[in-house]
Length: 309
Picture 1 (cartoon, rainbow, N blue to C red):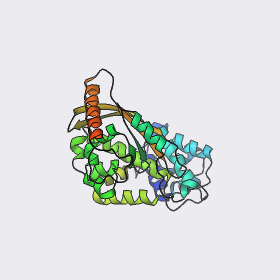
Picture 2 (cartoon, rainbow, N blue to C red; picture 1 turned 90 degrees about the vertical axis):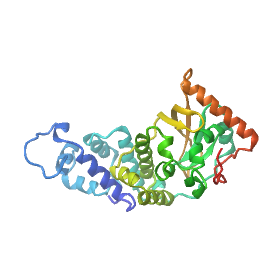
Picture 3 (cartoon, helix red, strand yellow; picture 1 turned 135 degrees about the horizontal axis):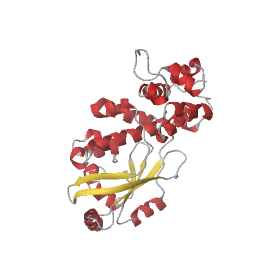
Picture 4 (cartoon, rainbow, N blue to C red; picture 1 turned 120 degrees about the vertical axis):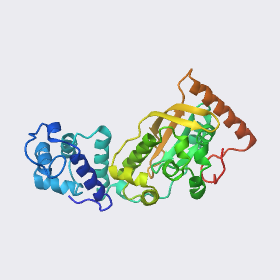
């Protein structure tokens, strides 16, 4: 069972870290005796998963291609992986298959169909946008551009031609003023990027982004090394907006199957009805509508440059 060299390190690091986080007490093993390293031993994981120590050792070294789903399930249960971590482990296994589409380099990025842009533009009281797996915003409505005005005006957007969540978060100091819970949002952003990288280990643009961020940001490098994963769920984020003031918004991402070549997600930010946050969001929507009338809003992120909404 051989794995792609592109994700073997990820498999090894992920399984070793999760094994180190478990104690014998957590899995019902005796606690006596001295231990040279924290966590469970490989042979203990092997016994609990019902495989040989030699076999599990090979698995933890990254040789995951060809492993059955039953065995992966047993390993996931033994390591007490969360649902997101289990999904990540299975994605690593799929990406390791030589014939798997996920193990091939992605083709040229596809354009977002006009019907999707029409859908975004119809949502006037919600910030709605489409991202790819690298967290680039590839299509948006007017309220998105107003809500995330600091990111659209960021040098990180001007340099690369389109807004990117992760670049803005870690490479632009203004993000610390914009996101009220910067540390929490940083952890979530990196965990989502880590999960996506597990699905597409041979994505050249993804590797370049991770390399860039790891080189330029100590915070990103530290969080990336922690190997936390998250399949993007909804939640709440708090902002300190330069025009609308404090905002607490709920968000919900949804898979958007518009291409077999690249993963896309539709995310919608909105406010709880009847709250001051809804009033502030309506104010921001009104400002966005006024600006859209004054100047034609772009339908994609290709030619934004330094232009703020």
